[in-house]
Image (cartoon, rainbow, N blue to C red; front, side, top):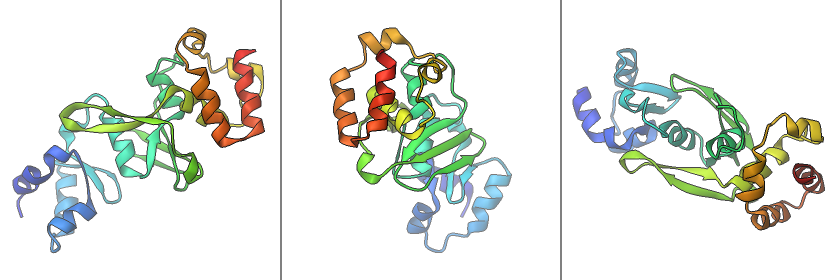
Length: 201
C-alpha cells in the first residue's frame, strides 16, 4: 500500500487508531505506520493512535485529540476553566476527566492528563464543534469547577482558592448556581460542598 491511498482513506477523520486501520485492512503491514511516522507523514500520539501533521495547528484540535486517545473522557478542570476565561492563565497541559485509570501522555501536540472519577460522575459536559465536522466533549463551567474541587482536595482554604484567581465576575454573573448545586448534589460529598462554599464567602 502506498501512503497516498492511506491518506485518501483516513485524512478527513483526523485522528486514527490501529483498530480502525486493521478493520479496514486486516493484513495491513504495521511497518508502514512506523516508516511514515519516521518520515513525518503522520504523527504518533500514543501507541495505536496517529494524526496527519496538517491537523497539528488547527484550532481546538488538541481537545479533539484528548477525547480520542483516551476514552471515555471529556475536557475539564484547569483546561475547561481557561477555555471559559474563568482563570487567567493559559494551560499548557490539557486536562481531562475519565472513568478509566489516571494517565498522562506526551507527544508532538502537547501533554495530556487524565484524572479518574467513578463512571456515574461522567456527566455535565457539552459537545463543542470544531472544523471539518469534528467535535470534542467539554465540561460545562459548573462541572469543571466541581471536578476541580472534587479531585483536588487541597483547594480547601480561602487562600488556596484565591491562588486560582477565579474571575469573580463570571462566578457571580455567568455561573448557573442552580446547576452547580444540582451537580454537587449528585456527587453528594460533604467535603466538596464545603470547598464550593469558600468561593462565595
